[in-house]
Length: 451
Ligand SMILES: [Zn+2]
Ligand SMILES: [Zn+2]
Image (cartoon, rainbow, N blue to C red; front, side, top):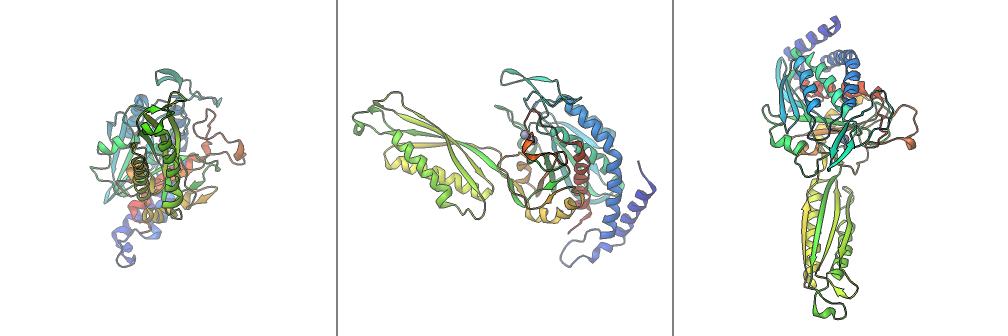
């Protein structure tokens, strides 16, 4: 729906950009659209977001009632593609199995901005009691399970569809291109490739090449609906799993000198690894964790075994520090083993990288998020130890990821059912903030706000 007011606002933006009014920006920086033009665009955007809201609620409930597990989002994919085609997007399906990528070329030249939502649900049996609660069943790890949007990806998809419609309504006046990215399998599918890493390999960031990318997650902390929090640099942890195989030489437990004891070596390695974070890393720059989670070896009280197997997790918030810690863990284990005449082999299962918010982009887009936040606004929140595969996009292009509060206003934070709970029930009052946030980030970035 287009109102007289929004037509006037668009005309104002077009004429201000055309007149070069933006050239008053400080020397050495690319001019963006002037503040008055951006204000006019915001007014139009907010009106469009309010108009699309009933549809966003309906989309959300439909998606919620029909959740699909990672790499199986077939109905979801068809649903999203159909909506995007109806809005006038150029749609590509089947990206990383079930992903959907849609492009909208604005009426004016400019950069390319991408907005991303994840599509997958979890093997959780819903207990919210909502009228549109999921009754879906699926197969996970060879077992039949309930399937539920227990992480809020139904919110992510419906808000992004809403933003896509808002932006489609402004197409003629957009100075650049919008790429809408619906990505499968964020939660990971054991034994299968998928998600953002595969989307990147299949060219989601190319053709047209993406200049900046934005995404959000609902919940994570029990903040009131509409709250927005984020931070520059590491927002969510990089999580790597490692295994260590310590090989000695088996012998009689009464004659340890006749072999090499991997149990004693493993014990030394456990202690040695404690010093990686506590003694060797500058903890004033970012936190980090190295944990030994399992240790197994031996079969009998009087046998020194051949080998001990260990495993653990490493959590980091800074890509450089992650590399450093991985190298030090390997060095510590190998050299302690060598000192005893044993060997230690480190096998790394790389997890999702650090979700890294580009500092310059984060600073530039902070006013856009501040404008739309309801409730708490915190541009320097604490990092979280959960991980997110949006991080793969941030490794390739400047990216910004933020959290959207979805707890009902006035609810008790200590009683909150968090993401992945069968009772996770985000408040739909947050939907409008998500739609406004995503469309504002796109419009403000393209229009050069804050440049
Ligand atoms: Zn999740
Ligand atoms: Zn999630």
